[in-house]
Image 1 (tube, one colour):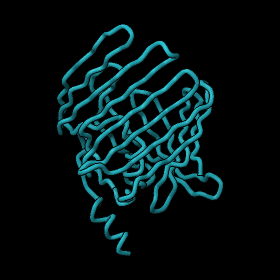
Image 2 (image 1 turned 90 degrees about the vertical axis):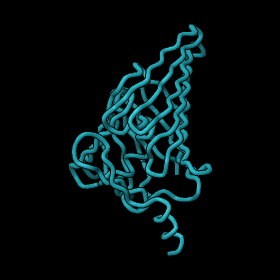
Image 3 (image 1 turned 180 degrees about the horizontal axis):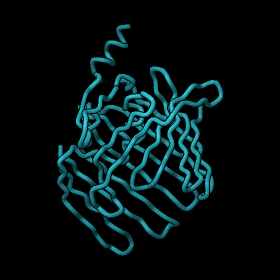
Image 4 (image 1 turned 30 degrees about the horizontal axis):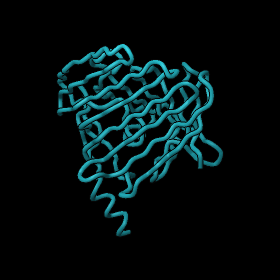
Amino acid sequence: MKYLRRILLLFPIITLSLSAGSPTTLNLGWISPKPEVLTYRSHGDHGEGLYQVCLFRSDSLLELSISIISPGFSKIVATSMKDDLSPVLSRATIVVNDQVAMATSCEYGRNSATISTRMFPYNRTLANTLNSPDPLWDYAESPLLVRAIPLDSGSIATFAAISPRTNSLASMTLSVIGDGAIGTVQCVRVEVVDFEGKSIYWMEKGDRRRVMRIEQPETHTVSELIQ
């Protein structure tokens, strides 16, 4: 019980105006003071690979890292956030077929962001400073935000975000679309639509709210948690 109280004190239930419209309440009570590593085995049009999400605390910030590895493709994202999950700094590196690399860095204010993307080996840089009437969120936070939104059937949360493909304002929409089960694990299904397309997250019910499966229909990719 003391351990649970400590978690709730560190990560309370908070209400934020994520974008234009009614405020959305985020439940962050599932975040543990201990590091969390979730590893997934993926298969799809691009072959088999691994997808890993790591969350831990560093000083006064939460640190999120995502690693995606498949034949001929590597993507590593690292995002620093405040306790309410609002991003501070995000960096991403993508390498395709040992030929093309893209490095992106984004520094966040509450309603602004400065994003820079450099392409290798062409040595081209695209940079932009963006301002938004709503708080900006990092698209790489999707694996956390699906675990934080209200789980009422039909509920929708929209987050103002940035597309690193165009360095312009975009959005993420998270919708609770139903229930389901993976083996004996009862889940809530959350649909995420962002600049990369549509994904379906299967999140276990209960206190931990782990993502058990991620489906990406456009690439026929399925990532399942290795337990």
